[in-house]
Image 1 (cartoon, one colour):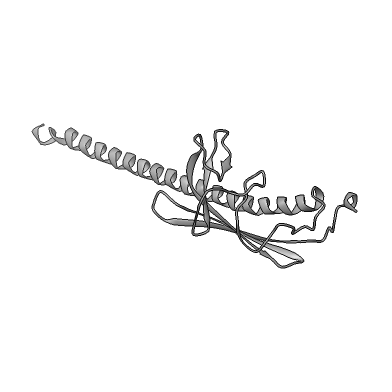
Image 2 (cartoon, rainbow, N blue to C red):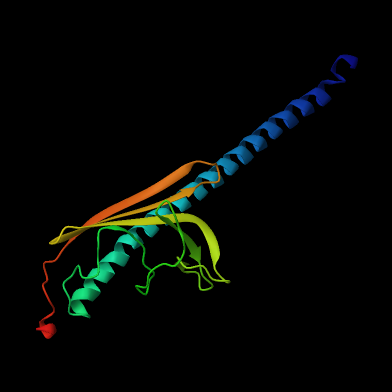
Length: 170
């Protein structure tokens, strides 16, 4: 009987060790999963903000033709440009051509700082090449992840002046 007296204690220690290893593995997996979820979320946001940069320029080109009765590329010049959603220019200073993006009190991404706007990690740069009959737009968004790695999302598009002027303008 004395030979087996410590066997239950030894079996309990082995079982507890195995449970601790399993729980540690699960927590490590969950931690890594949450970290990758954040990276994926930032990549989605960066991609959508880059696409939005292209859409801001497209909106300006469409407004020229449909509303203002001007050629599609009126007021557009080659170089780095940044517009707010209402078409007004950005008043924030640029960092190597990149403009800081904020979230306003309504949850919208904006460029101009206000007392209620919260800064984000995202910076956007929109570069335009006006070639007369076409306008090439290159929108880049960059940010630094929690892991210290620099990320960038890049979207380009080309717009042609195929519409001419609005019929009501003639």
